[in-house]
Amino acid sequence: MQQGNSVTHQMMGYDRASMFSPDGRLFQVEYAKKTVKQGTAVLGMVCSDGVLLVADRRVLDRLIVSQTVEKIFQVDDHISAAACGIMSDGRILIEKSQLLAQQHKVTYDEPIDVRSLVKDICNTKQSFTQYGGARPFGVSLLYAGIDDKPRLFMSDPTGVHWEYRANAIGEYEDELKEILLKEYKETMTVEEGLKLGVGALKSVLGKEFSVERLDGSYIKSNEKKFHRITKEGFKKILRK
Image (cartoon, rainbow, N blue to C red; front, side):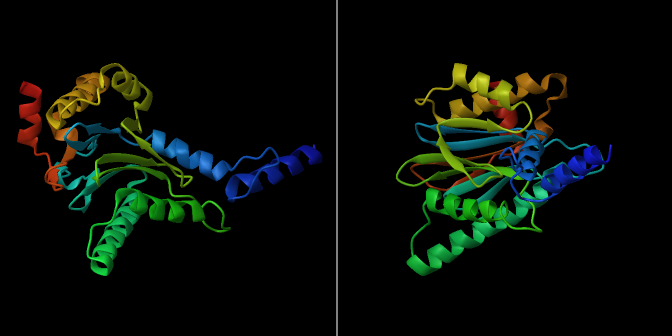
């Protein structure tokens, strides 16, 4: 019995710290990934004329002013980002992204490229998976921006990043990806992509769907300028 308790306490040690277990797992990182799965859904798409993000910003308290609940943020004129998971963690990383973009513009007199920004944020996220006394960031981020072409990157709690043509994270991730796999086309315009994105969220949310829950943005290649989608904008998309 004592031996069993000893093994349990030993495993709890691996469970509570960012250290490898005997079978090569980082439990804290695995828990962070599960946290992201519980976050409200976000999807992004690279289109023929730009890039977009659409998110569910579920508001559970009717007394909250829904417009103050943000899932999508402007990082720079040509970059937006959406967070999924622990939003306080996401806010810290978004603010760091904004600062990096500003510093790059002041130092080099040109906008930062999307991949460089994502790599810097991923370095920060990865460092929190290897130090004692620190926990991983419980958030995944979708970065949408324009360099020489529209780009979409996803960064998970481990600090890994990949570039996508279209992707979804958070709640209903699998269902949204299935819709994207069937219906997404690289030749889509931003307007067509927004219609697909809103339709996909409407499909997975069912009776819970509401325009009030939507947050969205797009950046067109010819402008390289961040645009947030208003409630009226979403209603117009639903009417098409």
